[in-house]
Image 1 (spheres, each protein chain N blue to C red):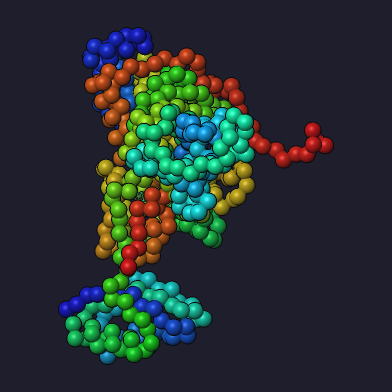
Image 2: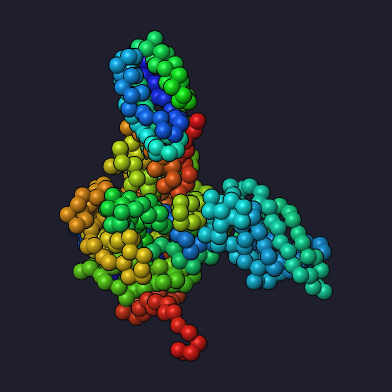
Length: 390
Length: 135
Ligand code: SF4
Ligand code: SF4
């Protein structure tokens, strides 16, 4: 019963496409079988809304008179990159404010822009013959900018760690506050709705895929940083640890603060929740089989964040169904769990993407290039070396 | 009957045991200690709920003040800003008394204030800064 991308897109264009969210599809497959579900459904929508640190925006301010080649740039006292052309910059979400620290950072500037607020732009420059101005202090809104787009080097991590703490003191991490002596466990994946857990071997999600980014239509631009297809996988081919990632691009002007939220992790730093949704075409029964997987079938690995080294010891595995139940067992102890990735928002994203496809006839795109496939590349560590040793 | 929440600040080296004892014995007030930060050499703080008759309550507060304690009746409150909350659930991982939980079906945040002990763990943990302690 194989379907082609063209056939599915024709059905989307004519308004006949049958679109289910990944949760709905899993229920349908459980009730009627994978075969029947694969026949009936054309596209399955996924969604995730978790903190994603490798996120940022490219902005172009336009030229002042006289013009300036901005070398040092601040937006609401948050430093932006000055190493691009005269009035281009990259603002990363984790950059803290020089006056308010991690309580306000790049992520908050982006959220303020999305909410229509004016942001103070300051820049300095040594001044050149063609760009004589040496200082500027003004205000900008999202509407004023020529271009403003997300370019996120790493979003939508395929699976993530479950964090626990076996030490005697509280730890503040990017996975939240970890209470001592296995006092709690936090985890960060949309599980059944997670984009890359639904297409574990990157058959349909690749460079050029049309996706949902923070409420805007966008694209997968490249493999994400730390994309690591070469990791342990279960019998369905689904990674049991952090694996694939996506670099994504989308127009900030079309995004919505409903699907983008700045975040501060006490004792750690600034980040932002980014809503990512990816449509997966039900090309055949193979892909339907992984789309049918539920939280009970998806596994995550528990790591002890009390160990500050690169290789944290694994303390076993659990399913997302166990994590969602509110407690898991680690080393014989009952440990309460808390998520970090918002399931209600993930559901809203998958539902919104479904609406785009069925009502707005949002076409899906076959990747123009596949992401690095399982077995093709391993994650390399950074070794500390000297010039002499090289 | 009155049931009030009190925020007490007391000077260094002030022992609290006899104070609580007197509240119970002399003023017939039933204390429920929600939170205490006591260090012999420093100023201490205690948040407690007391139940008793209106007259006894007033007399009890006067007694506390006579002992050199600062009594704040409009005790602090934990407030959840639902507009800022994104239902990530991270606060539920640090709320030991179970005041903050996720609805099993919708996975949206539920706040049962009756269970809150004002420990402020969630205030620090919430990445959206959606939970605040107000005075
Ligand atoms: S202050 Fe927050 S963490 Fe502490 S009991 Fe109340 S709701 Fe729970
Ligand atoms: S941690 Fe903050 S944003 Fe997350 S569910 Fe709790 S209150 Fe809402």
